[in-house]
Length: 471
Image (cartoon, rainbow, N blue to C red):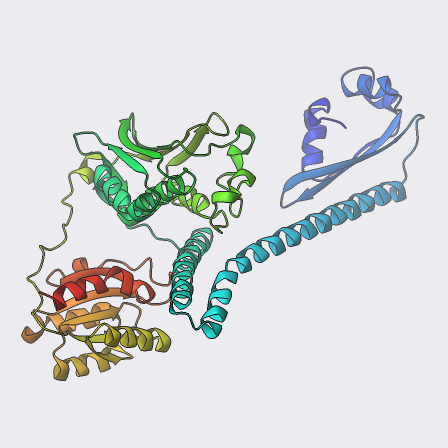
């Protein structure tokens, strides 16, 4: 093996640009200095060095030499160059085959996450015991929630890799984002009976960031800590200024990370072997997404753990906001709206173009004792609203033609709909996660119940409708 450092600057430049180095007689052409001395020391008197350049980068070289001087012919040089090309083609085929095997393994792991749903569906078909039916429904509910998060993360990573994510930056207090992330991750933390300690500076910590994306990144770190910390553990999250950056540290007393594997943590589809017991069917996507989101903000993330069974600390660095950005007025959500009408049931108008999602939500609302109606597009929804006078409208943002924002604004323009409550919804998993603004910022006068996906609406919003129903 030869280092490029052994060759002259001119020879090195020639090799990097794809030109062969041909020496017929080492003593006559190179003398006893530098590379000539090295060749003589190992008995080389004539040599062809054929480089291989791909995408303007020197990726490999092959050297053919002999122990006596030789006048290399053009055919000799062409033969060596062809061998280099063929060897590289073989190397690429081997790499491609290894990549296909790895992709096949990941596909099998992904499909394995569907197995519990298939088993549960089959159990519901066959079981007559109500308890078994209930357990099967719980399994399906948990696995669908898991698949939703998984596909969301995959779609986010795909958008980032294709440059389709547009950050909605603003001057925002990092302390507030940390608090929101803690609330987002609280179900996972409480389910494992962890204790979470939050340490924030007394003064605002202004960063120039997309609030939703940073909350997503920090919440992923907290969910990761909750997952890989034995039940009843301790998680600490702290924010602090650090020069021209702000830092967020998430520390847990979980299973730890071997030193040799810490560099793999942020690679996509790379769950570590020692975490398999607690991985809960996850495929190693969350931390890769965190790194991608932080990189988009011009920040960085590091991990430190002394090894297995030791604490793990993830440290996220974000650039501080410029003074003008930090001083910008941050729009606050509208004040809490008045209570919805006291009634045994609520009139609910579902405006949703996805047929299965619309039918499922209407059926669920019926089961909850409400009075649902549905429209498949914005114009139909507006017409139906005139006759129904609904109390609540779950409204898909990604409607064809007239989108959800336009529908909300049209409703708000009519006095009879001032008391109306809106639920902003995303139908297809991840499709509208980069929508420009939530409804309360596009339509500030909206009486606004929150944001959900149609599939997640029962868990996230229906308890509020239920509360209104029983006022």
